[in-house]
Length: 376
Image (cartoon, rainbow, N blue to C red; front, side, top):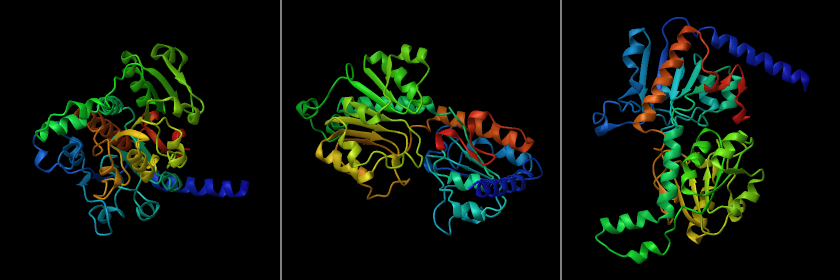
Protein backbone atom coordinates (compact mmCIF):
# COMPACT_ATOMS: atom_id res chain seq x y z
CA UNK A 1 0.00 0.00 0.00
CA UNK A 2 2.82 2.41 0.86
CA UNK A 3 4.51 1.71 -2.50
CA UNK A 4 1.19 2.30 -4.31
CA UNK A 5 0.67 5.60 -2.50
CA UNK A 6 4.21 6.71 -3.32
CA UNK A 7 3.72 5.83 -6.99
CA UNK A 8 0.38 7.64 -7.10
CA UNK A 9 1.90 10.68 -5.43
CA UNK A 10 4.70 10.65 -8.00
CA UNK A 11 2.22 10.59 -10.88
CA UNK A 12 0.28 13.50 -9.38
CA UNK A 13 3.52 15.45 -8.82
CA UNK A 14 4.49 14.88 -12.46
CA UNK A 15 1.07 16.01 -13.64
CA UNK A 16 1.18 19.08 -11.44
CA UNK A 17 4.66 19.96 -12.63
CA UNK A 18 3.85 19.55 -16.31
CA UNK A 19 0.59 21.53 -16.16
CA UNK A 20 1.61 24.23 -13.69
CA UNK A 21 4.79 25.09 -15.64
CA UNK A 22 2.83 27.16 -18.16
CA UNK A 23 0.61 29.16 -15.84
CA UNK A 24 2.30 32.51 -16.38
CA UNK A 25 3.66 32.19 -19.91
CA UNK A 26 2.12 33.37 -23.18
CA UNK A 27 -1.37 33.64 -24.54
CA UNK A 28 -4.05 31.41 -23.00
CA UNK A 29 -7.22 29.94 -24.43
CA UNK A 30 -10.05 30.44 -21.96
CA UNK A 31 -13.49 28.89 -22.40
CA UNK A 32 -16.55 30.03 -20.45
CA UNK A 33 -19.81 28.06 -20.28
CA UNK A 34 -22.80 30.12 -19.10
CA UNK A 35 -26.55 30.22 -19.64
CA UNK A 36 -27.82 32.20 -22.61
CA UNK A 37 -29.79 35.39 -21.92
CA UNK A 38 -31.34 35.89 -25.35
CA UNK A 39 -33.96 38.66 -25.29
CA UNK A 40 -33.05 39.56 -21.68
CA UNK A 41 -29.37 40.25 -22.36
CA UNK A 42 -29.79 44.01 -22.88
CA UNK A 43 -32.30 44.65 -20.12
CA UNK A 44 -29.69 45.22 -17.41
CA UNK A 45 -26.11 46.45 -17.97
CA UNK A 46 -25.00 44.45 -14.93
CA UNK A 47 -26.36 41.16 -16.31
CA UNK A 48 -22.86 39.68 -16.67
CA UNK A 49 -23.42 36.04 -15.70
CA UNK A 50 -24.79 35.01 -19.11
CA UNK A 51 -23.18 34.15 -22.44
CA UNK A 52 -23.76 37.67 -23.74
CA UNK A 53 -22.35 39.30 -20.61
CA UNK A 54 -19.39 36.88 -20.51
CA UNK A 55 -18.63 37.96 -16.90
CA UNK A 56 -17.67 41.38 -18.25
CA UNK A 57 -14.07 40.29 -18.79
CA UNK A 58 -13.82 39.89 -22.58
CA UNK A 59 -12.14 43.23 -23.32
CA UNK A 60 -9.75 42.79 -20.40
CA UNK A 61 -8.72 39.30 -21.53
CA UNK A 62 -8.38 40.13 -25.21
CA UNK A 63 -6.37 43.28 -24.44
CA UNK A 64 -3.77 40.99 -22.89
CA UNK A 65 -3.66 38.72 -25.92
CA UNK A 66 -5.77 35.87 -24.57
CA UNK A 67 -8.39 33.99 -26.58
CA UNK A 68 -11.83 33.94 -24.90
CA UNK A 69 -14.56 31.57 -26.13
CA UNK A 70 -18.01 31.75 -24.50
CA UNK A 71 -20.88 29.33 -25.14
CA UNK A 72 -23.95 27.72 -23.62
CA UNK A 73 -23.55 24.60 -25.81
CA UNK A 74 -22.09 21.97 -23.49
CA UNK A 75 -23.73 18.59 -24.09
CA UNK A 76 -23.09 15.86 -26.65
CA UNK A 77 -20.11 14.94 -28.85
CA UNK A 78 -20.72 17.75 -31.33
CA UNK A 79 -21.32 20.61 -28.88
CA UNK A 80 -19.29 23.81 -28.97
CA UNK A 81 -17.45 22.97 -25.74
CA UNK A 82 -16.13 19.71 -27.23
CA UNK A 83 -14.41 21.66 -30.01
CA UNK A 84 -12.16 23.36 -27.47
CA UNK A 85 -11.48 20.55 -24.97
CA UNK A 86 -8.10 19.55 -26.35
CA UNK A 87 -6.43 22.97 -26.49
CA UNK A 88 -8.07 25.13 -23.81
CA UNK A 89 -5.98 26.21 -20.82
CA UNK A 90 -8.80 27.44 -18.56
CA UNK A 91 -12.44 26.40 -18.30
CA UNK A 92 -14.89 28.65 -16.45
CA UNK A 93 -18.15 26.93 -15.54
CA UNK A 94 -21.17 27.78 -13.42
CA UNK A 95 -23.52 25.76 -11.20
CA UNK A 96 -26.52 27.40 -12.88
CA UNK A 97 -25.78 25.91 -16.30
CA UNK A 98 -23.18 23.27 -15.40
CA UNK A 99 -20.74 21.89 -17.93
CA UNK A 100 -20.09 18.41 -16.56
CA UNK A 101 -16.31 18.02 -16.48
CA UNK A 102 -15.90 14.26 -16.53
CA UNK A 103 -12.75 12.19 -16.16
CA UNK A 104 -12.97 11.45 -19.89
CA UNK A 105 -13.04 15.15 -20.75
CA UNK A 106 -10.16 15.85 -18.38
CA UNK A 107 -8.10 13.10 -20.02
CA UNK A 108 -8.53 14.70 -23.44
CA UNK A 109 -7.82 18.25 -22.20
CA UNK A 110 -4.06 18.11 -22.70
CA UNK A 111 -3.47 21.84 -22.16
CA UNK A 112 -5.94 22.32 -19.33
CA UNK A 113 -4.48 23.84 -16.17
CA UNK A 114 -7.29 25.60 -14.34
CA UNK A 115 -11.00 24.98 -13.69
CA UNK A 116 -12.88 27.95 -12.26
CA UNK A 117 -16.45 27.94 -10.97
CA UNK A 118 -18.25 31.27 -11.36
CA UNK A 119 -20.21 30.90 -8.15
CA UNK A 120 -20.12 28.26 -5.42
CA UNK A 121 -20.20 24.48 -5.78
CA UNK A 122 -17.84 22.52 -8.01
CA UNK A 123 -19.53 19.10 -7.89
CA UNK A 124 -20.14 19.22 -11.67
CA UNK A 125 -16.41 18.50 -11.93
CA UNK A 126 -14.95 15.04 -11.35
CA UNK A 127 -12.76 16.31 -8.54
CA UNK A 128 -10.69 13.15 -7.94
CA UNK A 129 -9.89 13.04 -11.67
CA UNK A 130 -8.95 16.72 -11.60
CA UNK A 131 -6.71 16.14 -8.59
CA UNK A 132 -5.03 13.14 -10.21
CA UNK A 133 -4.39 15.19 -13.35
CA UNK A 134 -2.74 17.97 -11.39
CA UNK A 135 -5.39 20.56 -12.19
CA UNK A 136 -6.26 23.48 -9.97
CA UNK A 137 -9.99 23.83 -9.22
CA UNK A 138 -11.26 26.98 -7.54
CA UNK A 139 -14.52 28.83 -6.97
CA UNK A 140 -15.56 32.27 -5.74
CA UNK A 141 -16.23 31.35 -2.13
CA UNK A 142 -18.81 33.56 -0.46
CA UNK A 143 -19.91 35.24 -3.69
CA UNK A 144 -23.56 34.19 -3.48
CA UNK A 145 -24.06 32.98 0.08
CA UNK A 146 -26.36 35.90 0.96
CA UNK A 147 -28.33 35.37 -2.25
CA UNK A 148 -28.94 31.68 -1.51
CA UNK A 149 -29.76 32.19 2.18
CA UNK A 150 -32.32 34.87 1.34
CA UNK A 151 -33.89 32.58 -1.25
CA UNK A 152 -34.15 29.75 1.26
CA UNK A 153 -36.03 32.00 3.67
CA UNK A 154 -38.33 33.04 0.83
CA UNK A 155 -39.18 29.44 -0.02
CA UNK A 156 -39.81 28.53 3.62
CA UNK A 157 -42.38 31.31 3.85
CA UNK A 158 -43.94 30.55 0.46
CA UNK A 159 -44.50 26.92 1.44
CA UNK A 160 -45.62 27.50 5.03
CA UNK A 161 -48.09 30.21 4.04
CA UNK A 162 -49.41 28.16 1.08
CA UNK A 163 -48.76 31.18 -1.12
CA UNK A 164 -48.59 29.61 -4.58
CA UNK A 165 -52.17 28.24 -4.68
CA UNK A 166 -53.39 31.72 -3.71
CA UNK A 167 -51.41 33.32 -6.51
CA UNK A 168 -52.71 30.75 -8.98
CA UNK A 169 -56.29 31.47 -7.88
CA UNK A 170 -55.85 35.15 -8.70
CA UNK A 171 -54.33 34.43 -12.10
CA UNK A 172 -57.14 32.01 -12.93
CA UNK A 173 -59.89 34.41 -11.85
CA UNK A 174 -60.86 32.37 -8.78
CA UNK A 175 -61.46 33.30 -5.11
CA UNK A 176 -61.44 30.55 -2.50
CA UNK A 177 -59.96 31.57 0.85
CA UNK A 178 -60.59 28.16 2.41
CA UNK A 179 -58.62 26.47 -0.36
CA UNK A 180 -55.52 28.30 0.87
CA UNK A 181 -56.12 28.81 4.58
CA UNK A 182 -56.66 25.14 5.47
CA UNK A 183 -52.91 24.48 5.18
CA UNK A 184 -51.31 27.88 5.87
CA UNK A 185 -49.13 28.31 8.97
CA UNK A 186 -47.01 30.91 10.76
CA UNK A 187 -43.24 30.51 10.87
CA UNK A 188 -43.08 31.73 14.48
CA UNK A 189 -42.73 28.88 16.95
CA UNK A 190 -41.78 26.28 14.37
CA UNK A 191 -38.69 24.10 14.65
CA UNK A 192 -36.35 24.68 11.72
CA UNK A 193 -33.33 22.48 11.17
CA UNK A 194 -30.53 23.02 8.66
CA UNK A 195 -28.49 20.08 7.41
CA UNK A 196 -25.18 21.86 7.07
CA UNK A 197 -24.14 25.05 8.83
CA UNK A 198 -21.42 26.46 6.63
CA UNK A 199 -21.54 29.99 5.24
CA UNK A 200 -25.06 29.68 3.84
CA UNK A 201 -26.46 27.65 6.72
CA UNK A 202 -25.20 30.16 9.28
CA UNK A 203 -26.63 33.10 7.33
CA UNK A 204 -29.99 31.35 7.17
CA UNK A 205 -30.00 30.72 10.92
CA UNK A 206 -29.20 34.39 11.55
CA UNK A 207 -32.08 35.47 9.31
CA UNK A 208 -34.47 33.08 11.02
CA UNK A 209 -33.74 34.34 14.53
CA UNK A 210 -36.18 37.33 14.37
CA UNK A 211 -39.01 34.93 13.52
CA UNK A 212 -38.72 33.36 16.98
CA UNK A 213 -38.19 29.82 15.69
CA UNK A 214 -36.62 26.90 17.48
CA UNK A 215 -33.36 26.56 15.52
CA UNK A 216 -31.40 23.32 15.12
CA UNK A 217 -28.43 22.44 12.94
CA UNK A 218 -26.49 19.34 11.99
CA UNK A 219 -22.95 19.57 10.64
CA UNK A 220 -19.67 17.69 10.84
CA UNK A 221 -18.31 20.65 12.82
CA UNK A 222 -19.95 22.69 15.55
CA UNK A 223 -20.06 26.42 14.87
CA UNK A 224 -18.31 28.96 17.10
CA UNK A 225 -19.92 28.81 20.59
CA UNK A 226 -20.33 32.60 20.77
CA UNK A 227 -22.07 32.73 17.38
CA UNK A 228 -24.16 29.72 18.33
CA UNK A 229 -25.29 31.56 21.46
CA UNK A 230 -26.05 34.78 19.53
CA UNK A 231 -28.17 32.93 16.99
CA UNK A 232 -29.78 30.69 19.58
CA UNK A 233 -29.22 27.54 17.53
CA UNK A 234 -28.69 24.08 19.00
CA UNK A 235 -26.17 21.61 17.57
CA UNK A 236 -27.56 18.17 16.70
CA UNK A 237 -24.78 15.62 16.26
CA UNK A 238 -27.14 12.86 15.09
CA UNK A 239 -28.95 13.79 11.87
CA UNK A 240 -31.53 11.03 12.15
CA UNK A 241 -32.37 12.18 15.67
CA UNK A 242 -32.83 15.77 14.49
CA UNK A 243 -35.13 15.07 11.54
CA UNK A 244 -38.32 14.07 13.43
CA UNK A 245 -38.06 17.21 15.59
CA UNK A 246 -38.29 19.58 12.63
CA UNK A 247 -41.28 21.28 11.06
CA UNK A 248 -38.96 22.67 8.39
CA UNK A 249 -35.76 21.10 7.07
CA UNK A 250 -33.30 23.02 4.89
CA UNK A 251 -30.49 21.28 3.00
CA UNK A 252 -27.22 23.22 3.13
CA UNK A 253 -24.58 20.54 2.66
CA UNK A 254 -22.30 20.19 -0.38
CA UNK A 255 -22.75 17.32 -2.81
CA UNK A 256 -20.04 14.72 -2.23
CA UNK A 257 -19.85 10.96 -2.57
CA UNK A 258 -21.03 10.78 1.05
CA UNK A 259 -24.05 13.06 0.58
CA UNK A 260 -25.18 11.84 -2.84
CA UNK A 261 -28.64 10.34 -2.37
CA UNK A 262 -28.44 10.77 1.42
CA UNK A 263 -32.14 11.66 1.60
CA UNK A 264 -33.57 8.38 0.36
CA UNK A 265 -36.93 6.78 1.12
CA UNK A 266 -35.77 5.50 4.51
CA UNK A 267 -34.37 8.84 5.70
CA UNK A 268 -37.37 10.79 4.45
CA UNK A 269 -39.58 8.42 6.46
CA UNK A 270 -37.79 9.62 9.61
CA UNK A 271 -39.02 13.17 9.03
CA UNK A 272 -42.15 14.46 10.74
CA UNK A 273 -45.30 13.93 8.69
CA UNK A 274 -46.24 17.26 7.09
CA UNK A 275 -42.66 18.56 7.03
CA UNK A 276 -41.57 21.40 4.75
CA UNK A 277 -38.28 20.72 2.92
CA UNK A 278 -36.17 23.36 1.14
CA UNK A 279 -33.14 22.37 -0.91
CA UNK A 280 -30.98 24.98 -2.63
CA UNK A 281 -27.85 22.86 -2.20
CA UNK A 282 -27.79 20.16 -4.90
CA UNK A 283 -30.55 18.03 -6.39
CA UNK A 284 -28.56 14.80 -6.29
CA UNK A 285 -28.48 14.92 -2.47
CA UNK A 286 -32.11 13.79 -2.66
CA UNK A 287 -33.54 10.57 -4.08
CA UNK A 288 -35.66 12.09 -6.85
CA UNK A 289 -38.49 9.57 -6.84
CA UNK A 290 -38.55 9.29 -3.04
CA UNK A 291 -39.17 13.05 -2.79
CA UNK A 292 -41.92 12.93 -5.41
CA UNK A 293 -43.59 9.98 -3.66
CA UNK A 294 -43.41 11.69 -0.25
CA UNK A 295 -45.01 14.85 -1.67
CA UNK A 296 -47.76 12.79 -3.29
CA UNK A 297 -48.50 10.94 -0.05
CA UNK A 298 -48.42 14.14 2.03
CA UNK A 299 -45.52 13.00 4.19
CA UNK A 300 -43.70 16.04 2.79
CA UNK A 301 -46.25 18.86 2.87
CA UNK A 302 -44.17 21.08 0.62
CA UNK A 303 -40.84 20.84 -1.19
CA UNK A 304 -39.05 23.87 -2.56
CA UNK A 305 -35.72 24.60 -4.15
CA UNK A 306 -33.89 25.51 -7.31
CA UNK A 307 -31.53 22.56 -7.75
CA UNK A 308 -32.19 19.50 -9.88
CA UNK A 309 -30.30 16.55 -11.26
CA UNK A 310 -29.46 16.75 -14.05
CA UNK A 311 -29.53 20.41 -15.00
CA UNK A 312 -31.32 21.68 -17.01
CA UNK A 313 -34.06 19.40 -15.71
CA UNK A 314 -35.72 17.26 -18.41
CA UNK A 315 -39.37 17.98 -19.17
CA UNK A 316 -40.44 14.68 -17.62
CA UNK A 317 -38.61 15.27 -14.31
CA UNK A 318 -41.08 14.15 -11.57
CA UNK A 319 -40.46 17.22 -9.44
CA UNK A 320 -42.12 19.36 -12.11
CA UNK A 321 -45.44 17.60 -11.51
CA UNK A 322 -45.49 16.64 -7.82
CA UNK A 323 -48.03 18.45 -5.60
CA UNK A 324 -47.23 21.34 -3.26
CA UNK A 325 -43.85 22.25 -4.64
CA UNK A 326 -42.07 25.60 -4.99
CA UNK A 327 -39.45 24.65 -7.55
CA UNK A 328 -37.72 26.98 -10.00
CA UNK A 329 -34.73 26.74 -12.32
CA UNK A 330 -31.37 27.16 -10.60
CA UNK A 331 -31.61 30.88 -9.84
CA UNK A 332 -31.00 31.52 -6.14
CA UNK A 333 -27.27 32.24 -6.44
CA UNK A 334 -27.32 34.20 -9.69
CA UNK A 335 -28.96 37.47 -8.68
CA UNK A 336 -27.43 40.54 -10.32
CA UNK A 337 -25.59 41.30 -7.06
CA UNK A 338 -24.18 37.77 -6.94
CA UNK A 339 -23.17 37.90 -10.61
CA UNK A 340 -21.11 41.02 -10.02
CA UNK A 341 -19.41 39.38 -7.04
CA UNK A 342 -18.52 36.14 -8.77
CA UNK A 343 -17.48 37.93 -11.97
CA UNK A 344 -15.09 40.07 -9.93
CA UNK A 345 -13.80 36.94 -8.16
CA UNK A 346 -13.17 35.11 -11.43
CA UNK A 347 -11.29 38.10 -12.84
CA UNK A 348 -9.15 38.31 -9.71
CA UNK A 349 -8.21 34.62 -9.91
CA UNK A 350 -7.45 34.82 -13.62
CA UNK A 351 -5.19 37.82 -12.96
CA UNK A 352 -3.37 35.88 -10.25
CA UNK A 353 -3.14 32.83 -12.52
CA UNK A 354 -1.51 34.88 -15.31
CA UNK A 355 0.97 36.27 -12.77
CA UNK A 356 1.70 32.87 -11.21
CA UNK A 357 0.28 33.95 -7.84
CA UNK A 358 -1.79 31.95 -5.35
CA UNK A 359 -5.53 32.42 -5.01
CA UNK A 360 -7.28 33.27 -1.73
CA UNK A 361 -6.92 30.04 0.22
CA UNK A 362 -10.66 29.64 0.81
CA UNK A 363 -11.30 29.53 -2.95
CA UNK A 364 -9.34 26.33 -3.58
CA UNK A 365 -11.30 23.13 -4.16
CA UNK A 366 -8.36 21.19 -5.60
CA UNK A 367 -4.77 22.32 -5.16
CA UNK A 368 -1.62 20.31 -5.76
CA UNK A 369 -3.53 17.04 -5.92
CA UNK A 370 -5.46 17.59 -2.69
CA UNK A 371 -9.21 18.05 -2.35
CA UNK A 372 -10.69 20.64 0.01
CA UNK A 373 -11.86 19.13 3.28
CA UNK A 374 -15.59 19.40 2.47
CA UNK A 375 -15.11 17.16 -0.58
CA UNK A 376 -12.95 14.53 1.12
